[in-house]
Image 1: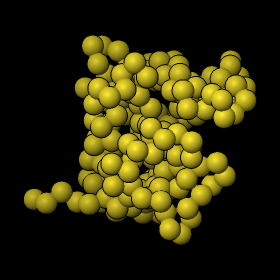
Image 2 (image 1 turned 90 degrees about the vertical axis):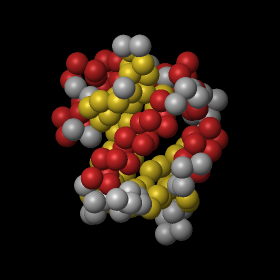
Image 3 (image 1 turned 45 degrees about the horizontal axis):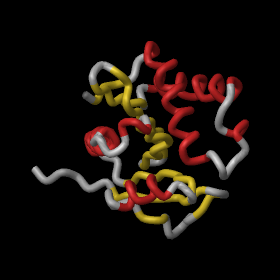
Image 4 (image 1 turned 135 degrees about the vertical axis):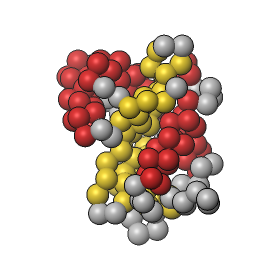
Length: 158
């Protein structure tokens, strides 16, 4: 089930975020850059602001949070700022469902272009996005250790 996040979800969202990031940053960045109590508090604060804006979707399975996505609108485009699935739910369809739900929201709002940053060494995420039509942004292909990807949000034919 995909639904809008509420403030009651914040602890679970922050924990899921930390767990997911640990899988792709470990071995590439210092642990303090993505884990630990300070990072958990910083992450929870950021998620709190996104939930307040109404820009967070949660994916539940068997009553538990299995995935989360956040986005931010601006200048006629949207940025997918986060899309995480608990590692024990990888390849279960939750990421696909979250991605589709984001597209539904964006289409309903008339958004034509989406962008995201993906950690260059996160090959799993890069493959996920590529299989859904995301391409490296030709205007701004990189941002530090991340690739900038772009997607044309195609309206659903009626």
